[in-house]
Each structure stands twice: as C-alpha cells, then as structure tokens.
Length: 332
Ligand SMILES: NC(=O)c1ccc[n+]([C@@H]2O[C@H](COP(=O)([O-])OP(=O)(O)OC[C@H]3O[C@@H](n4cnc5c(N)ncnc54)[C@H](O)[C@@H]3O)[C@@H](O)[C@H]2O)c1
Image (cartoon, rainbow, N blue to C red; front, side, top):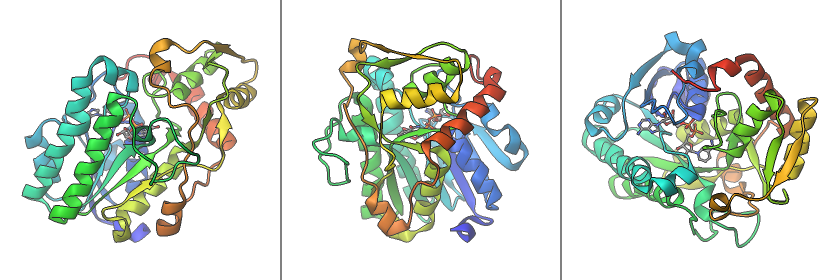
C-alpha cells in the first residue's frame, strides 16, 4: 500500500473537511502529489485550519463538485480520486432535500461522467455511509443487510454509491465504496450538532457544559477513529480486489450512548451529562441500535481498526483543547 501512492497524482473532493484533510496529511507523508477540491460552503465541515501543517505540500482548489467543468479539469491527470465531498447533515437533508440531491447524487453522476470523458484510468474510492441501512433487522449489520434509508441523505448517498459501482461495471472505471460508520477525531465538525452528536459533545465538554444524551441512552453504536478510516480508504484505493465492491467499516468496541457519555465525562474532569427526551425531528430519523460487521474488508483487504475508543477520544479532546478557537464559530 505504501508504494501505491508514491509520486502519484491524487484528488480529494471534500479535502478541507474532516476526513479529507486527515487523508491528505497521510498521502503527503506517503509521497503523493495531492490536490484538494472543496467548496468551503460555510455551514459545512470544510476548514482551512485542517490543513495548516501541510499547506505548503498540497494544492487547494476552492470549487464546487456541482461544477462539472472545474471537476473535469481537476480529474484530467489524476491516478486516484478519493471522493469525499458531501452534504453530511441528515436533518438538513430533510429541510432542504434538493441541495442534498444535487451534491450527494447529481454531482456524483457528473463527476463520473467527467471521468468517462477525460480519465478512465484512475481509481476512485467513494465515502458512503452506514445510514443507508436504516433501522437494522439484525446486528451486526453486514453488507447483505436490506437497504432501507430513513432520510433523504441516505437515499442520495445510496444513489451516489451505486453510480460509482455502475461506472465500474459498465465502463471499467475502477471504483469502490466504503460505508463509513461514525467517524471521529481531530478536524471533525464540532461547532454544531449538524454532522454528529459526538462533535457537539466534544465542544460542550471543553466548554464545561453538560452533554445531552437523547432518550434513555441505551442506543448502541460503533465508532472509528479517523486514522483507522484513513487506513481503510488507502487500502481500498491501492487494491484492485476492491473494484466494484462495497465494504462496511466498523468497530467491535460496541458501546451505548450513555456509556459513551460516561467515558467522555471521565476523560474531561468536572463534566457531567444528562438524559433528555429525543427531539421529535431527530426521533423520526433515528435508526435505533447500530453496529457493523466489518468482516468483509478484514478478509479481503486486511483492514481492522487499531485505535481504541478511550485512546481516540483522549486524542480528540486534546486536539480541541489546543485549537478550539479555530473550530467553534467562524471557519474561514
Ligand atoms: N464523519 C462521519 O462520521 C461519516 C460517516 C459516514 C459517511 N461519511 C462521509 O464521508 C465524507 C466526508 O465526511 P466528513 O466527516 O469529512 O465531513 P466534512 O463535512 O468534514 O467534509 C465534507 C467536505 O465536503 C465539502 N463539500 C460539501 N459540499 C461540497 C460541494 N458541493 N463541492 C465541494 N466540496 C463540498 C465540505 O466543504 C467539507 O469540507 C462525506 O461524504 C460523508 O457523507 C462521514
């Protein structure tokens, strides 16, 4: 895997966001020539501070994946595309479904059309989501589980994922999709609860305010530290065994939200949490208990998460204690 990226041209859409910027840092270390495409739409997760330490080692192109001309230009000479740009808020997708459709489905199709026209040789890794499974019929959820998205975002991410597989199968443009579970770490959006409850929990803890757990806190979840997610993206990009495939990411460290809150409060002394009733708009799209079976990617690509929750959360809290003023409010 390490040699696959040496001196290679890599485009990351959503490259100023949480996962994209961490991926960029690793690719720079592996000797790749990295270009980041990001629209920096203010209410989304992009933040130039995410790449402060590698600013001189990457090319940044502030553009929108909905602009087919800009994207075709950027795709021309690339060996790899890590396609991470997305509208990530499930609630926002219900309030403004058209924008979610445009970014998560239509723009994905136009990115693939651009590949078909200007570069059929590159390898694409698409960041999909476990949200598309909806409320699980059984646990852990494997890739054969029925797909029943509970929100507009899930439907559009599913379309985006399947456009990639279709272009792999019909046009031979090598592509695969990873269905990410809750991913956390330095650079995640913490200014609000739009992306994940974990982000706002981190912020509240550092501000010394109680964190709020919806419902009775018994919902089960699994989490990946961002470095583990990056390893999976890189392994999937480097291997042709992944072409045309979908893989779940996940963790065997399954935890209830109440236990997670207890762990986090423990890591940030003097803090507390409280159970509050589920806000109705969140309850409507909640998926109940979820954790993944990630056996397929383990068997086929040799991936498994390495960073435990306690260690990952400690690193995350330390990062935001040091850099909170770069993340709380304004991003540019
Ligand atoms: N973080 C998670 O827990 C998680 C879970 C499942 C799936 N994912 C997927 O992983 C990908 C990356 O997520 P993230 O957590 O890094 O989120 P993020 O919001 O930090 O990053 C997404 C980036 O995409 C950019 N972007 C949004 N719309 C764009 C557009 N129209 N044109 C160009 N750039 C645009 C944003 O500015 C942002 O920088 C997303 O596709 C998301 O759906 C993330």
